[in-house]
Structures are given as structure tokens and as C-alpha cells.
Image 1 (tube, rainbow, N blue to C red):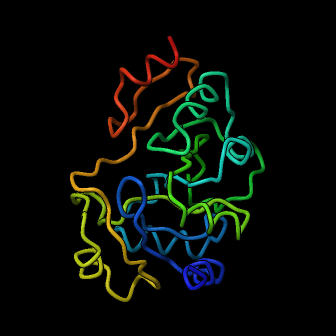
Image 2 (cartoon, rainbow, N blue to C red; image 1 turned 45 degrees about the vertical axis):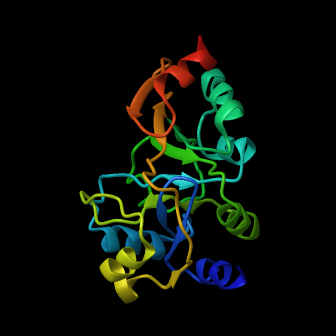
Amino acid sequence: MLDIIKCVKSGGVVVFPTDTLFALSCDATNDFAVKRVFEIKGRELNKPLPIFVSGIEMASQYIEMNEDARSLAKEFWPGKLTILGKSKAGVKLSKAINNGADTIAVRVPECKVVLEIIKELNVPIVGTSANISGDDDSSSIKLIKEKFGCQVDYYLEGEIISNAMPSTIVDVTSGKIEIARSGAISVSKISKVLF
């Protein structure tokens, strides 16, 4: 565990299993590392990257946690829900994360590794799926290694559940709840919390 934390601390890019899919990650405040994630994924810079945080308190430092966002977070965090909220001014994140957009996608995964890295660094880390942009998600660390090779500085061995789905993304920025991406948590479960 110490090796992956050291790698992220020193500006490295890592891959690890989460409670949904394998994640490609780095320190979300490190410009150079974040830009490397975009390059490794072949992701366009105008497509923001989501971040992992340790809990509601840390999330509220980066996005406006309105009443709906707090209700959803209390019900589903840690877990498979990503909340897209309005970003707070002056937050310490790489500008490449959202490329000037006024929103940030935030999640608290149910994943010991992620939470330990965040606790040690005391900053968010990138939480994007470990794939080439536009490709299907891979459930095999072996296939991910074949795709990314030595572009990634550290691979944490592990497995994800078969038929894993990405997190559900809920947009809370407009004052009404919108599902930005369907995923592991159903719309009906989300609706029960809010209505």
C-alpha cells in the first residue's frame, strides 16, 4: 500500500481496482500528472475528469453541496454515485480537471485503497476509468497493462466484480436532479431518496 501512496505523492499515474471499475488516477492538484492522465487515455481536454474525495466534508470544499446533493451523498456515499456540482471558486485543483468549466464531478468510492491515498495526501485524486477514451471498460488488469504499458507508473493488482458498471452520475447544478449517466445505482433508488 505504501508504494502506491508514494507513487501518487511523487506525481505518478496509477491504476487500481475500485468498487465499480478499474480507475486511472493521480493527485488531482498536480498539473503535470493530470495532463498525463488525459494523454494516456487519449481524452480531449474539454472533457472534464471526475475526482475521488474522502467524504461529504471534503466534497463540500470543491462543489456546492445543496440539499439534494447532501441527501444523495448521505444515502449513497461511500458508493457508486457521482455527484456533478457547481465548483467553488479558488479550489486547489489542477485547472486541467475541468478546463475552466464551472462544474466538478465528485465521488466517494467504497474502496479502502482510494480512501487511504486521499487521507495520506489530504487532497482529491482523479477517478476516471482505466481505458482509452471511447473504448469499452476493461475488467482485467492484464488487458489494462497491455493497453497502457509503461505509461502508467504503478498498477495495483486486484479484481472488480464481473459485469461491473460505472457509477451513476447525478447532475445537481440546475436546482433539479438530472441523470447525466446511467450506472450502478438505478433511477428509482435515487428517486426514493429525493421524493
